[in-house]
Length: 409
Image 1 (cartoon, rainbow, N blue to C red):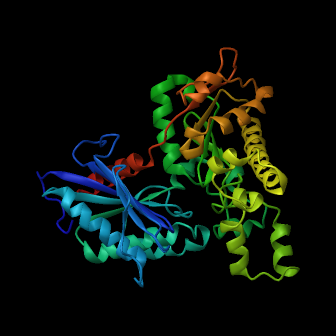
Image 2: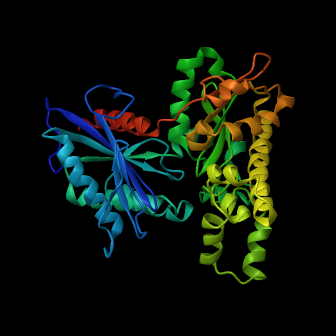
Image 3: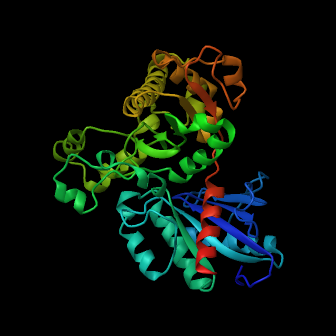
């Protein structure tokens, strides 16, 4: 992994997705443009900063990783991945490393080669995405120092939403705030960009109509698309906005934040911890931020069961409310697509959401829904309802390929 690519050699693209407690990686062939849809090798280091970090590759058995006692556990995890990557390359060379970067601010709407100046810019956006931004930049910093001749490409989750019209970008604050960059950006853009490709391939021209994509995972958002472009989305200035999430609150009356700070005397750091880590499904249920566990336990008696049922009901209500809002903005709804971990695998959540959208003409084929079929709409549904696995890694690899090709690297 210390050797960079030379003309005519066997080339690969490495994609890194660095979060607060994990680093996911994928290795793609780097010859074809675009690269193949699936990496030939992938894995992750999980539990970084916790008592039992693990390393897994290609869906194999998790192995313990000796990160305990390390002053910089993310650096140690990255070095562990680099060591395994060197073995996997087996003489092949890296064309580039693509990094998923959550926030590109108002300056970066396209993927970009990373240098010291770009890195400094991106560090200024850390307060807007504290769960992800600092860790991606940490990896860039390390690799710029250790692999100075290997292209590092930043691929932005905000980039796909650069087509949002002004009315969707603005916040109802003094206009000077907009000029300083306080605006709605939108996130999960790598996922939505993949949807713009995959849905056109699967559904043809119908995908170019009024489409809402529901990216439901640990983080969650919706994107209203027309002509396969983002025209409205639920996340805004930060990744806290919009839907209720695993541990994040989603859209919140700002007066509640003022109350927490003025009346309950929480510090700024404490409020941030509440909003990012102690809210959402976890905060309401008091049990878990994982829909699978909550669904398995929702029939429990007593207060625990009541809170679990309340959390799931609120989660579904927020999704339904925001789909209705996007349908209003789009002027109707032709297609509804579920993606990401919950969206792709939770038939129960999809069923509850679609049940409450019957007024829009949404009807499910429950058997197809249980099978996670690509099309789960019933025969009488006026809206095409689908399930489409996302592929953010491939979008990042494709973007890195395009950037390096333009730069001649």
